[in-house]
Image (cartoon, rainbow, N blue to C red; front, top):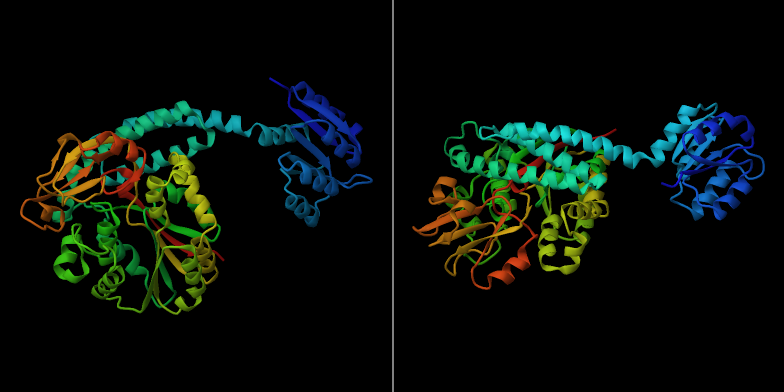
Length: 517
């Protein structure tokens, strides 16, 4: 393995001889110089892994040398060393993207720590992450069992997401495969958990987790008051792992007061889950109470055209009959108009913003080769989500809402899962096209692959005819018809879908934010 090469520029380099000997004994190759001009020449002539740069040198100053090095070698780590603790010097150095800043006199251990921090971080983090996950692997494995509560499932899912994000950073293929095996085991047990409990939760409500119809009642309405303007932001199809990667950016502007998950209802689709979220009712209850505001699968027309009206009716039933704005953002140009409108919205006690980009992204990934390439796997899908957010009108809205001291509740209607394995299904021509759930009559399917709800009324789902039932795909399965089976499977395998049962689809984020400052 090649030695790490360090350039050290200091006009009093002779006084640093003990430090240099110390580093050489540790296996580092150290080149020294006494001027900024010579340092610039050496950087052009040789390749260095790290530069130590004295701030106060005769001729070209350390700050000027730093600026010139960075203009040509922006990725080269530079550590500024100075006797001065003047704030403006620190700010200048930091503004020029130094890697570290040390105040004289420095000791050898400080120097060694800086080197390891800047050059050896990746290896050290990788080793530590590997050890920690190996320990946690056993802990998670022991926690997985058939009698887990919903609260225990929340903790397990959060741990799995945490380690998925941590392993992303070190790109350890072997560990990722082990984690995926553990996620698969958890997914099977979670599907069984839902199958055993879902109907009972809906029937009597005892021990039921927070689900879509109760989110506004329990987590939003209590915060609507005259004291401040509250904004409910619903990001369609936002998974918990995606929230985790957005969180640091949002935390720059907001305190995270509460962070939780709730359970999306079945089917985990916009038509069912989001309507239930805003209406405060299950789908069959919406159909019964407001028949003109509900459109069934087989009927023509948009399935989510009445969200604003359903929300208003819900607020009225909750005694929160207040003026509010409702905006559904489908593109950047309209999103910017919404941002401009926020000062006027602040006059209301309550406002709702719905962002559809992530749902559009998941569908585009299925149909567009370029998006497939950009979001090839789970990690890339998360990265694309973060990239969108950083440059989106949603991010601009977050900044403006923070500056206006608005209270924000952030959530979603459902998540999505990357489907991998097909499951054959047969139905008549009226069966819906969703890959993760089917509703209709005379459905033929692999019983081990699905959660079959024979009586839709048991799950508070609309029933169009007497022989209609619902089936939901479990784990990472997707439904495929026998006709043209191989083409169908090849086209949809490894796409992101929603509608069925999985941790990713059903266990979704719910966050309360308060502005900083």
